[in-house]
Amino acid sequence: MEISILGAGTPTPSANNWGSSFVVHLEEQRIMFDCGPGATSKMVKGGTLPTQVGAVFLSHLHFDHVVDVPALLLSRWDQGAGLIDPIEVHGPPPTGRFIEDIVGPDGLFRDDIRARIELPGSQAVFMNRGGTLPRGRPRHHTTEMEPGDETRGEGWKVTAAYAQHAQPFLECLAYRIDTDFGSVVFTGDTEPCETVTALARGADMLFSMCWDLEESMIANRENAGQTGSTGAGRMASAAGVTTLVLVHHGPQLDNEELRTAALAEASSSYDGEVVFGDEGMRLRL
Image: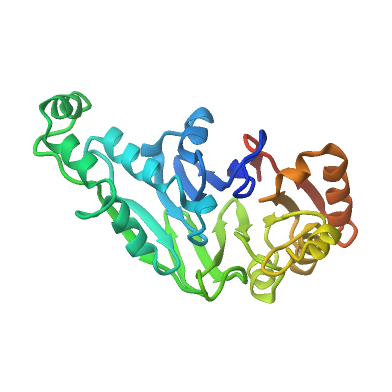
């Protein structure tokens, strides 16, 4: 099993990272966790096509975690030519409404979808890709998840847990995927909390938010609902994970000196391996 980091940044674009997104490679399956800015393009550059993604899990509906969902859904539908299974979309409420607002009959891309279904030129492209007329609309199965919910696929199980971040305005989840090859946890956006620590207990790898150095977060009053370098180490230690990967970090941590400080702060309370995650990295269990 491998994990591709498509996005390890925040809402602020930087030269190295922007937004949050990960793909788990499990034999022939591709399972996505969050779908932030440019995730579809970054994924293709790394060798994975949209048609290969069978399921996507959204932690919450902040744009830096979901803004590329339209690109994923529409490119998957367009390239799939009606020959692939509907994508499985999971996330906290109101994920169902969010997806319908994108590809539903009255959704944002209704005119685009209608044109591709009815335009003769688009029909020819569709048939040349192996499709059979009449062309159907984008297909998906959407499941809204609550803390404690589980969903299963071929050789994997994903469990959701409460993540303390943007409530009551947004429901927020962390996810754990368990497979025969190992267990990986994605905190999404959260402050250190027992529910996420419990979810991560005994996992092989923890992808934890690391917004900034702890002292800076406190000084800037940015620590509420977010995890910093020291908090990530404490959660990893309490959960007993094997490897901690620092992700969802701001552009200030593009500075090599501050990155070194973040790694040191995380390691001050955690004895395991600490990795500073960047876009384009691919980690193997």
